[in-house]
Length: 182
Ligand SMILES: *[C@@H]1O[C@H](CO)[C@@H](O)[C@H](O)[C@H]1NC(C)=O
Image (cartoon, rainbow, N blue to C red; front, side, top):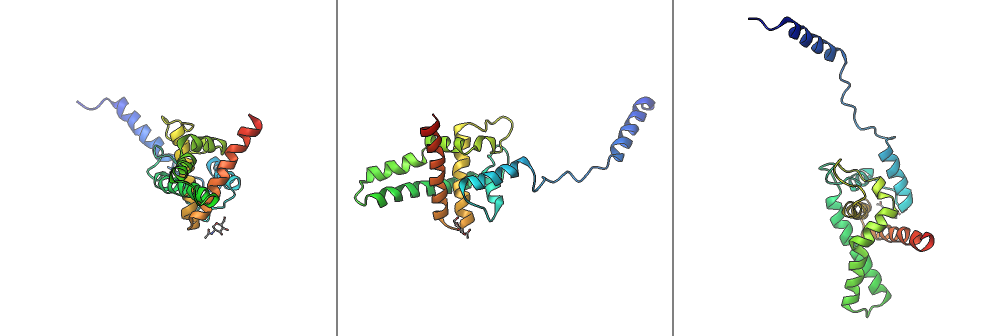
């Protein structure tokens, strides 16, 4: 028995149709003008730091659920840099500051609550790329992205100083509307 002719014809038709629509080289990510890139440009203005390697910023604003190339490693550095900045500020203000106070300053500055608030004020929930089932506004996502941002500045700049500057600027961004508008 031969295959039913109708099925064979349909199959041939399908093949012919898919053959004619030239598969346009699986559209590479638009480089300059995607909404994501526009948001990254605005974010750089907001934090007062222009990246030499915008790729680092892209990576920082990418959650692990979205891509294997994400901000997790940058966030490790960002957390350490934030703690370092806070401990330095505490000791610079008072060289006799007790260990517990310096420790608290470092912990508070880098804690998830402060970090997620700062990230929300900076608009990170609307920027960070996450996979479908992940909430971009969830505190761990926002906080991770904010830390990754600070870490990305350190790597881009080659110093922790620039990262500390951005870290404090983000704290200010987060403080101002709280006291003024709310
Ligand atoms: C590091 O950051 C500072 C402050 O934004 C900037 O003036 C300097 O050019 C940066 N250096 C590098 C190597 O990116």
